[in-house]
Length: 130
Image (cartoon, rainbow, N blue to C red):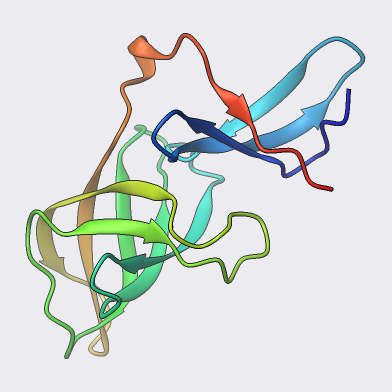
């Protein structure tokens, strides 16, 4: 079927849902971006803020490892950076909701609202690698 581990899972509109975790004969398992096992390198739409978007046990998303001298503000859009070798650059991850100071003196953190609702997932697309 051409599906491989780590192939991106997206919705129409280039919205990231996750990646293929396991490939079976007739079905595959997906690691959602909201999973605590998920980490994706990200960049803000204006290409200023760079960080790592991570899921959590509660299903909440956050962006971390953003340098303190970079301005983060609610409403900023986060995209995939393309640096992780899984997701191409420019796919939609989510919108910054609330900026908090991180645990580090060098970095800041923010909560992120994904562009999908788990309850509404009916049809997704697998981006198969060549």
